[in-house]
Image 1 (cartoon, rainbow, N blue to C red):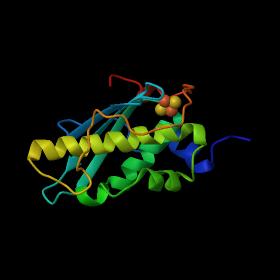
Image 2: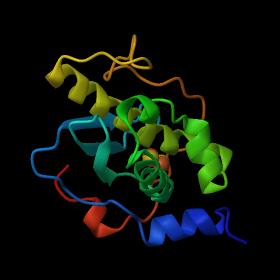
Image 3: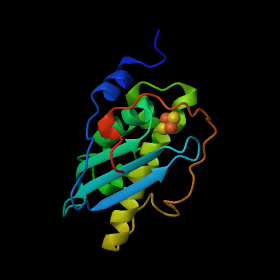
Image 4: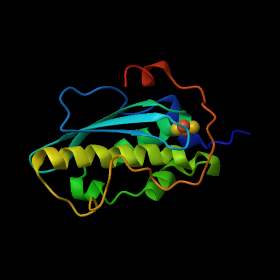
Length: 160
Ligand code: FES
């Protein structure tokens, strides 16, 4: 039996929001301190502070791809403030869970989204509740070590 549930497999096999975005309003790149994999997230934000689009590219495993797929789905259509309230646990719950050794892969998506919002806020000179003290270069607290690189789809791996 697979260690992954059907939702995770579906988001890995047919990920949403993969790709590039021209002139994003915010962009965040994060490298996992656990496995060294990288995630890049780009967001488009309208004049009402609503995230109208989000895209991701990753040098990451299947769990990172599935997490990014569902996490970008979850923030599209939300205001920046609401997007900042999305927790890593909510992403994991929406995925139906990940094996403990793979939790750190979902942190990649979470941190990269926050970094993209941080970049947007900095460019626009805005401040948001939920970004106080956020450091895009800081490592997220993470105790789950497991660095087996799994098969990733080729289009996720191009020019980060
Ligand atoms: Fe590196 Fe999953 S993101 S092992």
